Structure formats: structure tokens, C-alpha cells
Image (tube, rainbow, N blue to C red):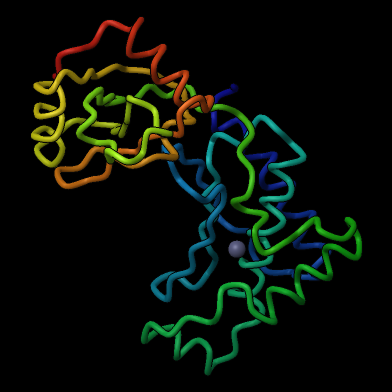
Length: 235
Ligand SMILES: [Zn+2]
């Protein structure tokens, strides 16, 4: 992947394209590229009454490499940008100021989406088009805690993998105790970058352990990691 900042001109160009389709002459958003592990959104638009000039659109770095996907996400967020800057009337604005936000994909979103879809085709901008698909696999390493104890699998549930897991980007006071306990029960802590596991639960003191279905791809990979990776001692 290229340096994130080198994508900003592409994002501005996409913004201009979709602002043009919406017939909006106002300012562009400020783009920010972020890289959050395990996030369920790929794009997000934020408007604040403290700075009403423009919005901030955050884009996950994981979508930068796939231009068609990036374009759909930017188009979706530009509709939100247009809603905030072009469609809010003084009453909406007052309500927003006291914390009452308009519905996030209500009639004005649908109206903007329809204007873009009239040019780009049906289904180009949808309610979920900023979060439904992830393209590039994240390469950021994280900690995966693997439990091998039957304790985490209910006795009746023999259809489950003998291994369970939870993950964390960092180890700190909030999850350290859980890690120590699982390791003392014969579990293993490994450092990997396979992002299928970051859709599961995070390691937390009272947090859940995910136990995949026996024979599933995740169960097989978990068993492979447990048997082949050398466990690490938490830092
Ligand atoms: Zn949205």
C-alpha cells in the first residue's frame, strides 16, 4: 500500500465528482485516513456544531487499495456531508445542537443516494455501502489468546472446536488478568495478523471467548495455530 497521504488527492477528486452530481457548491469535507482493527464501519462522516464550515470524513485504510470500493464508500459519505451542509434547516441545526440528530439514513439520505444512483446505477449508494464489505486484509499484528480448556465449551456442545479465542490490539490492566488465567489453564498467546479473528470478541476481564463450530475454517486455523505457533509471554 502507498503512503496514506498520497491518497488524499484521490479522495478530494472523488468528493468533487459526487458533490457535482448532488449539485452542491459548498466546501469539500476534510478527509482523514484511519486504521482501526476490528471496526465495523469503513467510512464515517462527522459534523460538529463547533465547526460548521465542513465535515470530517474518516476512511479506513483497508479500503484504499480497491478503487471501485473506495469510490462507493466516498459517495455514501458525501451524501451524509451534503445532508449536513446543504439539507439541515435552522430547526434541524438547533435540535442537532442539543443532541437530537436526524435519522442517519432517513429521507434526505435516500434523496441524495437516488441522485447519485441515477448516474452510477441502482445500488451504487446503499444504506450499508459504507460497511458491508472489507477488501484488503489488514496486515496489522494483534494478540490472539487461544484457550484449550473444555471449560469454555458447554458439556452438551460436542459440535464445538476444542479451542476458543479472543483478541486484543494491546495488553494492559484491563485484559492482563484474563490472559494470565487462560495461560495458567494451558492456553496460548500468539501474535498474528490474520484479521478473520478480529471479528470475534476482544480479550476483556469478563469478556467472552468465541468457540467456533468444529470443522469450520476458523476451528481448523485455530487448531493449527495452537499446535504450530510458539506461544509468547505477555509483555
Ligand atoms: Zn451512512
